[in-house]
Image 1 (cartoon, rainbow, N blue to C red):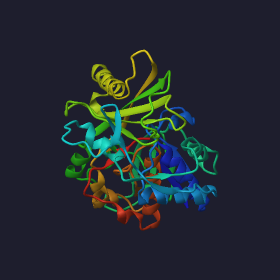
Image 2 (tube, helix red, strand yellow):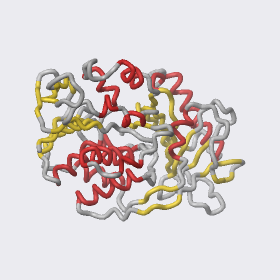
Image 3 (spheres, one colour):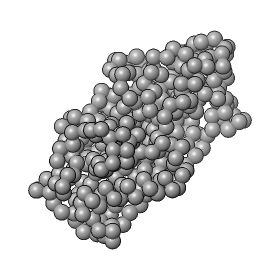
Image 4 (cartoon, helix red, strand yellow):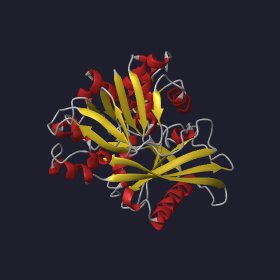
Length: 367
């Protein structure tokens, strides 16, 4: 079967490997405009694999594909916070009114997965030369439907405004919003279009610190868990952070802001100052003892779980598999693995999709 995967992230490479292993003739339409290099996928911010059916299933698919074992283990997660210069168990956000709480709550999980490979090694496996064709720097310009009836077929897709690509099956892994302009009004109603276009979008603000000297030890506790830092004002932005596994000389902290504010340099600067202030207060870090780098990236869209129950979207075409980056447990590498699981589920009707909870907030993340 000729299969075309439309993706701008790591999930597309993972799925291409899996389907090629199963005998598909795969073309990966890579719509990301960044250079085709491993560094494009290496910064995942906080390293955290939630213990969910989708992540476990996706990792198993990759194990089978790459013929290796990740030694997947579920271990309790015990997120921490700092109060009065002491580490304490993090219970919750309390009465915090910051919008960032919705996105950060993903990290407050009861358990997580540990694997015996580094994320960078898993990325290398996914990006290694495979038996599939890659079309880099591609722009999806049009979808050509056989008819304007629900569940018809897509004949081909147009790339970069000039090249038509035909396939037996098309798999779309990108954000639903990017698809709106390509779908005829007859196939997607006004109400669904409006709901998709109005969802909240987020940007991640990350502050990476290199500490000149090790931070004080906290009663012998190992700083390998996530640490939430809470501001005194409930409407200010909390953040979550993690220390490097090999010591306390490096740490990464992040919070979330509304995507439309990501271009506001003053607002972003204030967000970074808030993170810096929380870290210095919690760990008594003087202004002159750290080196830092800042990353601001458009990252997430919330509240899209309903889309899997929307027949207008899911039945756009008989040969069109819609598996957007989605779900509450969808950050970084975990997001890509879950996206792989959803696409595989949609193609082969596995039981994983039935375990999605449509009642809680969701995040759709760009890796």
